[in-house]
Length: 274
Length: 343
Ligand SMILES: [Zn+2]
Image (cartoon, rainbow over all chains, first blue to last red; front, side, top):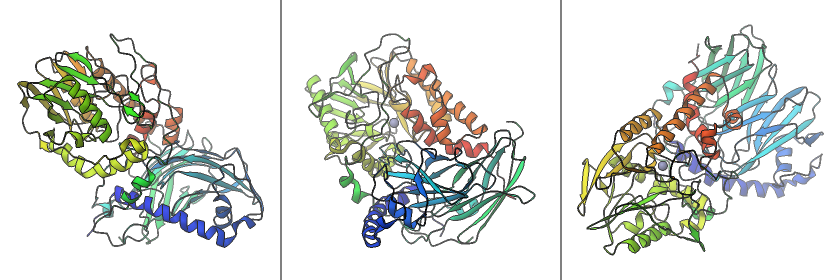
């Protein structure tokens, strides 16, 4: 049987699990005595969660600061809680090695790690939100210093807002790993949608089933950028990657795999009529 | 391909959190624009929610012989407006009042029934639900002693999505929703007209705003009630929109000889402007999103960087409704704009 768990089902289970997640994290917080981070930060959002993530997600770095140059843009309210769009922009910071995205509240706080390699330190993506939460972007430079920016997203949802169709799609297997992509060399950007159910592992008896890594290369093999996914982001994840104008050729390779070993391999091309 | 086992059913865990979450989360930070209007004729002043001392204060406005409606605020759902954002129509017949759309909650339905009683001593004859969005039928509970008509597809959508909508409405409106139990319509419309208490209603089964949208024409006065196929001075909403079908429905409505249009949201319209405004906006929206996809924009960029044209920026619930539409419509549009690229 290939019945797909509908969007609504996953979302609802997510809401319930999120509450449990916070309780569990809260307990862990006191047990781990997280205020003994190497660097004491005064979290402007005062969620009580940052030190915990500073330690467990970022590895308790020696140098870390909140930095307004790290810009996280998202709608103030999540219209579709399963597909909340976010753009993180750290182009004001030099020598970025990686950007780690995470939420304060959620069953799986760590979202993804972006390694810009030859790209600009800027990324757009979508993710599943379980409740109102800050989204944090922690930017590590090559010197090992971390700069953190954030925004708050409300997950109030609403009548017409509720993710509508709990459809059971039975063709996921055929669609799995299909990549819809384009390159805009003159604008310095690449966009892609990768078909994948991206199961959370939190619902029913479906184990976690996610894309773990997406790598962009020049056709000569030069690495351009890498995305590591730590959680299911959203079903059929969508990304926009940004480069200097003219830095991209007309074609590039997108490849990766999911946690069950299914490969993803595609060549994205510039469109003739742009 | 390898993947885990699939479940038999999704369960319904969200239900547990609904009441607890009611009212706990502040409403969206965007404030709906007020202060209209475009240059068209007779306009009632922009409606704000009719709220008095924490109760709905519905005052029906007569717009034709035996036809009244209560206009909702031209806004999105907020605690301040109590969800009083929708138009409900009351039409007098020899058998009692016919109610078209019943509002957002038990409490709203009660206020609407009271308003109907103030106009006619004959009670309620029947109700209609134009489509399955919660602001149009969550007052059904109050009218369930009489027939509640809807298209068959509307009834199944209401049954399938009612609980999910209810979760959302409790989160957004909190106490305003107290006691509201989802009560789907009971009578399926199969004919092209229906006579109630001597009054003939021509029925138009359409779609596009949702999977099933009913419009009704009151033969006696030529009043066309469009449901959410037409919005006026309030931005159209698109959570379940099928734009090509919506344009077709607007064509069909434009062909009806109507003396007066009562849209789903916004003031009455005596010269067809509501159909035109809805079509112009949807066309602009679709064209703009396709253009954005061709240029490689991501959703946040579109939301933040799009300049709303003068004709639309002062519509009620802007720019919030535009942002919502980007979320609803862009994923499908961007996918079509990018070719399948696998090796
Ligand atoms: Zn509607």
